[in-house]
Length: 327
Image 1 (tube, one colour):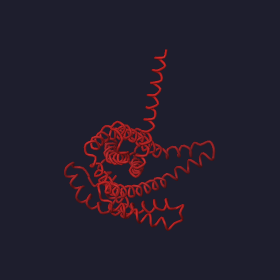
Image 2: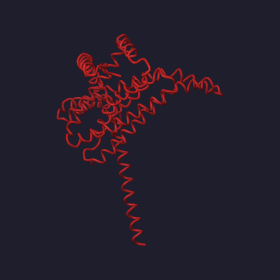
Image 3: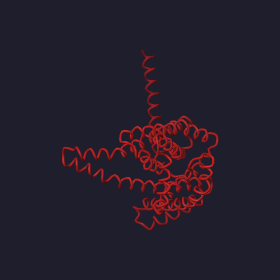
Image 4: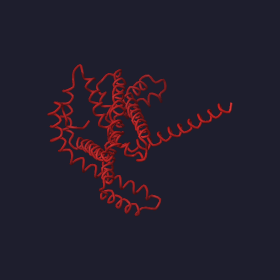
């Protein structure tokens, strides 16, 4: 009997350790995933365009196909590659972050340029539509979305990995990254599913609601969705530029060039001290984010001609497809 009690006590101790480990994994994953906010918002803002033009019955199946491809991107390709790099060539992670940060800056600057020069964007968009019309439109849209997701997934997972403590074991890092990948995929594509069906739900409420209040809410949803999508794209663009700039500054400091980070920190602290003491923290954060955003815009516009006139043509020459970048 005493042996059985001892065994049960051991099992309980093991279960307690396992539960603590799970809590630690989830906690670390949540903190790491929060660092990838810019890319996550961009992913949620961009994906609804891939179901535009399809019947309502095909919207959710398309979102599911893209989400499934996103999981495969993160878990089967990006996660193993990052674990290998972080184990055998950890310094490469910071260079990957710089590349990812530049990509976010480029994406944000391109969206700003589309607002400044909409005529150019409209011509390119119409050309893209002509290129993908026909019986295989859905297949091409899904494939294109998964390819774009791969880039964003690599950014998100790299940012998340860089946010994890360096002394974590291999298995712990793998578990935390897996939780980040699955959690962010569920968050992004769950949100996308809600967004793409909101119009249909609002229309159904407006037309078939039994109460006047229900119909009014439905009409409000239908009228409000275009503005909501514009707001989402605006927030996503601002987040990309801010996060892209901050990633580059932090990665440069980790590599050994502390100048930009120290300079920004000095300005932020000086500006914060001109405010009441209870606003020091908020003021420092706002100034730092603002400078990071300006840096992101500057770097983004510097990369635009490089991508459009050098990298884009090179990709088209190799693949035979458009390589202008952007979503």
